Image (cartoon, rainbow, N blue to C red; front, side, top):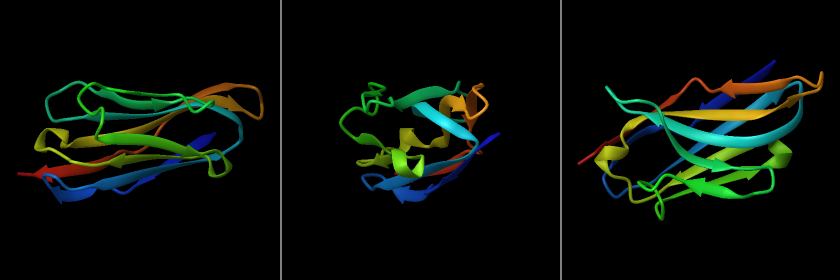
Amino acid sequence: QVQLVESGGGLVQAGGSLRLSCAASGSIFKINAMNWYRQAPGKQRELVAIITSGGNTGYADSVKGRFTISRDNAKNTVYLQMNSLKPEDTAVYYCNVVGITIAMIAFNSWGQGTQVTVSS
């Protein structure tokens, strides 16, 4: 079993910043990709940012240049630094971690979600 605990959401004014964190724990052998998704009311969940085990990153066009994903492998933690926030960034943000357990079983775990609200 792999558990994810997210933190860092909240209410911020447009132009402000927030930093999300997601810590993975459990019987982890290796973590491959660590990702952030978001889902706004009435919309489908969308991929926001990814980071591979090698540190390669990718971003949705809507957040490029404003959001930065990073990871601390020693802590099995992924971060999402969000700057220059816009009202359209308002959503529930979900952490997603893909890897292999100690029992050599692949896992694909999701966090509980954290609300980010950007006021205009």
